[in-house]
Amino acid sequence: MSVDGKIAFPEGKPARLSNEEDLRRVHALRAGSDAILVGVGTVLMDDPKLTVRREYAKGRSPLRIVLDSGGRTPRGAQVLDGKAPTLIVTTEDCVRTFPAAEVFRCGKEEVDLELLLDHLASRGIRTLLVEGGSAVIWSFLHEGLADELKVFVASQALGGKSTPTLAGGEGAATLAGAVRLAFSRMSAVGDGVLLEYAVVR
Image: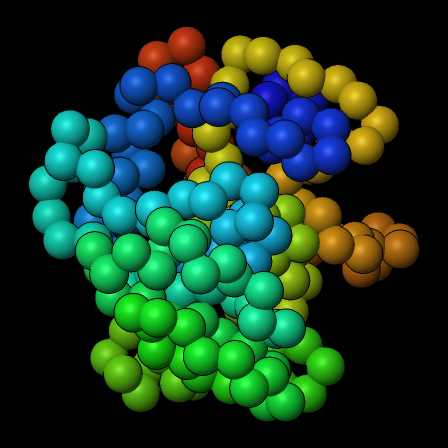
């Protein structure tokens, strides 16, 4: 994110905030994870590959997971390119199927994250990297489903009232509803800073 907590330009237009050192860190995290997860909003806005880029890290690409309650992932999305296994997670009443991807349906009006995590655990997935977007990050934090939070802070400020922040969604209404974090470590990553926290339960 930027120094002022933004992760994109206004209306969600992508902004590359990671420097080269942070890209190496992120791809090493991907290579060390069993699965990587994003929401469909990230797929629609950024069209990410969610694979490990060989110029940044060595290792296999993890299972790619897209939270897509209504089945909006475009047929031409890069997560459907067949270059790594992909799981599209929809609600129970969504009937859409996707080329080169498996589908798991859980939840009524939106994906049930706890059921999804149980399903992933039954498949032997132990390390899940949640990359975004902001509503997905807030959901995992708010529902107590995240163990730790790693935040790269770029030496830039983006500003803007409608600019997406690290954690979006509905957010906490009071301090009592805030997600508590325990600071673990801070380290320089190129011209930016990596902040690491444990999620307090």
